[in-house]
Length: 337
View 1 (tube, one colour):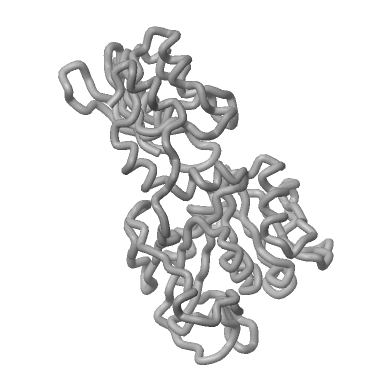
View 2 (cartoon, rainbow, N blue to C red):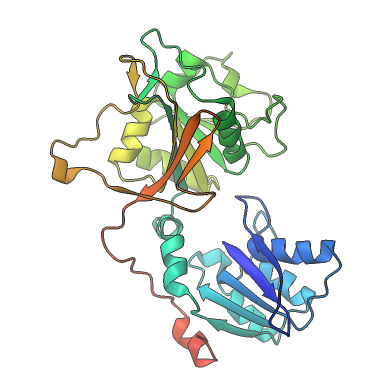
């Protein structure tokens, strides 16, 4: 989500964006940037992709930040479908702020459609991560996998870990790799924000497994059903989860159609044998193949990271997204676009 503040003369003053769960929303980010350089936003207009939130969650209400900053006009694209956060437009109007909606709604819906669908389904947004060779292997025959990816790819992955709510692997990965699943910088230091470390599967996790750590952030989900795993995480407050494997877990989420974003680190390496990234999606005919499209957000669909390629994809849309703004008619009656 993004926000831009425009001055009374039409000049763009500052912009902001949401960097991930637990960080400032786009509106608050833009206002904070303005404050950092001494910009007075009184009488300005804010243009934002999503209706400003109206609740206290991991961050404060954006409506309060907008009112406190003296912003007099707000233009947003799409109503917030998340019930606890909705109602921001009404709060702003009650405070005397002019509010209009619908500008760029189709584009905003397309850009954020997976997030809207995840919110509607009351489950976390799912990013699936695969680090693989050119021949789609995630480990050699002897089980070694460290490191298929370049140091640059590993750093990028740890950057994502520091922004999400939870990281999910299977019990097999814990048994074989004994990962820590923490977010770390290139020097190995822990990032200030850490994801919940979730393990999915029926086997018990060894008491001395590294995943336990000493911060109480590890959780065992005793199920092999990805729907059930996501439901348990959602109930506990998780809104964005990254699935890292192994191959059975990766395959189960893809087969269930529960992946909103796919990030593949492709190393220029061939193994010829070993553990395949995926072990079956229940597809037997080419017409039934899953289709994905390139996602240009977050730095581009294809990027070079060291010797690797970073591929960023999202599910190909089969039908037009059916998400008419629920309060658009009222907003447009009050001067909306």
